[in-house]
Image (cartoon, rainbow, N blue to C red; front, side):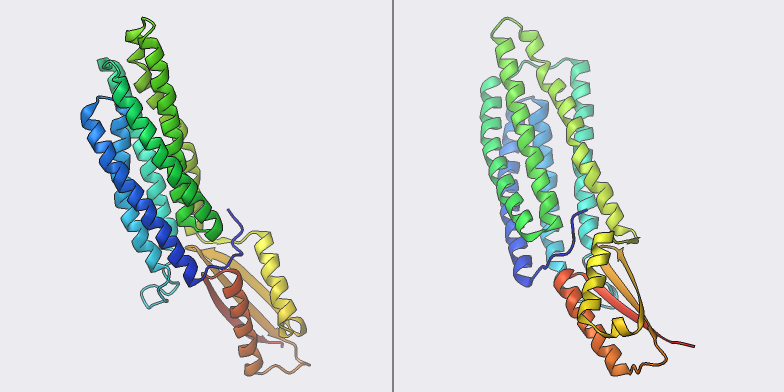
Length: 307
């Protein structure tokens, strides 16, 4: 999991949505492109590509909606805010990628059993080259935006474009090999290239989405933060807030549904005065520190008197 100690402003949310809208526009173009070519050829890979872009377009619309939810304040129905929707959406997106890959494997195996059709080289090369150009362009664009904004949504989006670009490169290599075989007297063998490559590459494409799927499952569960995050926050609290030095203080920091929750237990030293104003001032400073280091947060505290 990446280091969460980053700031995300309102401008960052707007930049994130702009990137997602551009990404969706690319998806819609490729969706129409794929649907047209899926009718012109019997290629398994192109048919899988077309169905993948349809799903990506639907998920893209939902992604933009979820991106807007992040800016909403907490409510009675959602006391921790709406950030928990992000890992849920990322799980769905990665699960859909895995589902497309599994479907492609099954479809390609069926083609091998029935006997593949001869490859249509001109159509296949045209489709692969144009699609590769769009995929690479959007992959570079979303990757830079995801890195600049440290956005989990864009991270998943960039991964999809990266996988699509790799898929297109694989398609071009497969079509080139089929073209060579077809023009060297091995026409029957050339027909098997498309489904075989589709099977192996679909298996490879399942690896990264599977890792991200389980990573987002961990975010949704309740778990303690890593030692680096804990030490960083505690050192900031003690450095900026003298109350925590003069009184015994215990910090509990954990993740819940993508929210960083900090609970502070203050044990008053019986020989040192501590009033409610001091406690309120301390918690306000804690909140400022949290907002600067981890925007999606929740702060609570308990106060104990020494016996």
